[in-house]
Image (cartoon, rainbow, N blue to C red; front, side, top):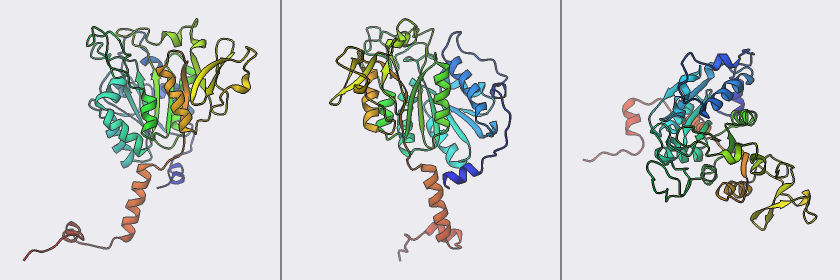
Length: 348
């Protein structure tokens, strides 16, 4: 099955859907002020923009965690599975019904700890599944333990003297596993969040959208530096394909490469100009790796946007092609002949 065949099978009639059509009748049971509300709202507002795609074509798969309640609140098909296994089950759903738009709602603990193995293999297979990673840097549902993305030195219920582990960088992991679409956004930036959701939908292959999301109860203020009006402009870098990497309240700061080392420059200091600023290319894996490392350096801004977008063969398409080729070569065989295959023998 190729992309044109998948597109041709989608009903192009305008369904005239609104956000209410994607809202279930379940009471949303997240803590007041939780960043999950924003992610839910932006998904429900974005999906009606996908003109001609009936809601019966969407399915949400989740594991365990606060974010994993997501399927209950979406008026689409959904499956609340077990801890860490959403990626594996979503893979099966997509392979069995390639015309579905399959989404995974997961947290940093669910996806990157117990679910880490399934996550990396979903990325390398490049199955057309969209992952929404709610990253609040803590285990929220189980009441505040350190997660795989908790900062080094973080004091939590399981690390009362500070975490001695270093956090996973989800973007860097995805790049290392040959991910084909990797992006990051924030719960406090609804417009950008909607843009990234649309980019995920329009990509053929596995997409990872990391959402920096606040947990008001167990890790409140984890991203204040990037959300507070007084500090966000000087600490957030929006990366866009074909545009220079400029940020700051006055748009006077830029990213320059000194060899392979990224540095912040003042484009108005007389020594540097906008011509010295790195222009981003979202098709470059090398650049994506460099920009992904910003998250680990407090002297550099937090990058938001699409790190990498490239075309790569998809598992479910090649699987379908193999099945079709096998059918062409097959002959009418009995059950016994099929079971014996071509590698059986008799022992006298």
